[in-house]
Length: 159
Image (cartoon, rainbow, N blue to C red):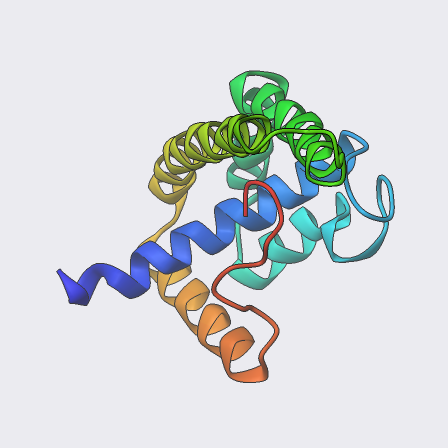
């Protein structure tokens, strides 16, 4: 089972990268659409690094778009709202402990939903990659981790 862990990590990274680009492309990124490492250009950068064909890149874009325009995108938008509601509740001195717990539970439920949706997206994207591309992705993941650029948990919704 541990032998497959790097491949799973690699698949998660590629899905996260494509989801990040889609997230930013939908106006949810920290710098807005097209800016920084989460912009739509990130998909093209990852595609180039992995040697994806035009067809693979098109297929990945279609998968990401389908998820972001569907249940994953809706869950991520709901997560944004739920986190804002939780922050407001935490800072409301009149709020009860139960209210804070309910707001936190809403965030938790959405995190679970997002994790499952991302998992489904990872499976679909991973199926498009050749063994060589998966190996290259493993190398990229290792390089990012060694540089400290890819912490295990980013704290961003859906990543």
